[in-house]
Every structure is written in C-alpha cells, then in structure tokens.
Image 1: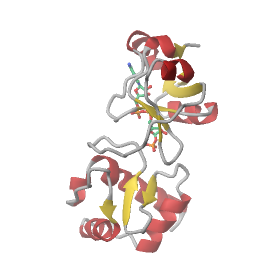
Image 2 (image 1 turned 90 degrees about the vertical axis):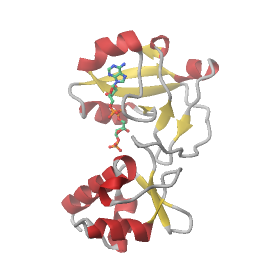
Image 3 (image 1 turned 120 degrees about the vertical axis):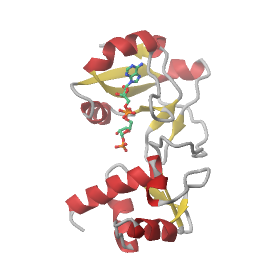
Image 4 (image 1 turned 180 degrees about the vertical axis):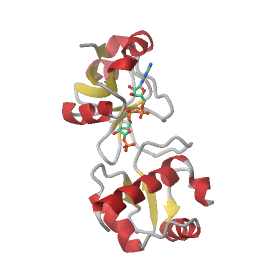
Length: 181
Ligand code: HQG
C-alpha cells in the first residue's frame, strides 16, 4: 500500500468505525469494537477489499493512532472521534495544568459566548501541545489556539479522559476556563 492508498483506506475505516457502520451493514458493540473478520468481510462486500496485513499496516502507521486492536487481536475499534453512541470505557484522569484547543477564528464569537461545546462528537477534544492544536484548528480555517485552564476545571469537578492515542477529552469547557488571545 502506498501512502495515498493508506490514507484513503484509513478515512474509509474512520467513517465505518466512528460514524456509519451501517454503511457496510455492520453494528459495533457498546464500546465501539467489531470483529476484524466481520469488518474485512463487510468492507469487501461493499467494494473496499482490505487484507488483514494492510489493516495492521494502517493501525501501526496511522500518524494519529486512530485505531486499536483488542489485546487478542480479534477485534478493532476507533480510539476516539465517534459520532455514534459508544462508551469507550476510559477512566477519568488528572489533566496537565494547561491544555490547548485548536479552532478557527470564525468560531471565536460563538465560543466567547457559549464556551467550547462537543458539537457533533461525544467530547470536546483538547491537545497537550500547541503544535497539535494548531493542526486541529487548521482543518476548520484560519487556526486559533485557545489555552484551557485544565487544572482549574479539574478542581471544579469537570472530568477529563485521555484517549488511547493521547487526545484529552472533556464534556464542555465553560468560558471561564478559556484564555482567549
Ligand atoms: C468548534 C480530528 C462554535 C470547535 C482532530 C471545532 C481532533 C464551536 C468545531 C478531533 C463551539 C468542531 C476533533 C461553539 C466548539 N461555537 N464553534 N460554542 N464549540 N466549536 O471536528 O476539536 O482526524 O468536531 O472549536 O485532530 O476540531 O478525526 O472537533 O473547531 O483530534 O482523528 O466546533 O478530530 O481528529 O469540530 O477535532 P470537530 P475538533 P481525527
């Protein structure tokens, strides 16, 4: 597989494992897992033939570690980013004092009035470093990095979860905990 094919297949897997498993006739379990064999068979039936070795290559090389195999290697799921109802089973963690949220300047007014909301996803996604936040923001337009006072949020009983691939997740960030530029 070359990089272009890997990216295309990875995007397709994101669609199936996070958003629309029914597109290929699949159902995920309550924690987002699906049998690898069933996934590959369903994809093949819908015109996307992926070999087991190719799937392993994607899981390992994916720059954001978007997917994970179960310990026994028989199941696979997306580590975060779902829009369908799943409970990923992450336990609450103490966040670093400061986290970052990358967004776009066009959302600024709305965020100033409502804080950060999870929108279509299950959580607000926060990054541990500015560089990652910058990349996340760029996807939406002119990037803007907001500093999140995670220590104060945690002290105020907001829960934080750390996904398998290093993304910090929380329900919402009220305006009081955001430092605007
Ligand atoms: C914005 C990618 C107006 C929020 C990335 C964001 C990440 C508001 C957008 C992951 C708002 C939602 C998540 C408010 C939040 N008013 N806009 N009150 N509150 N927003 O894509 O954080 O490639 O759902 O700032 O790398 O951009 O999928 O979230 O701009 O880790 O693996 O609403 O998705 O990873 O956009 O990205 P998204 P996100 P993957």
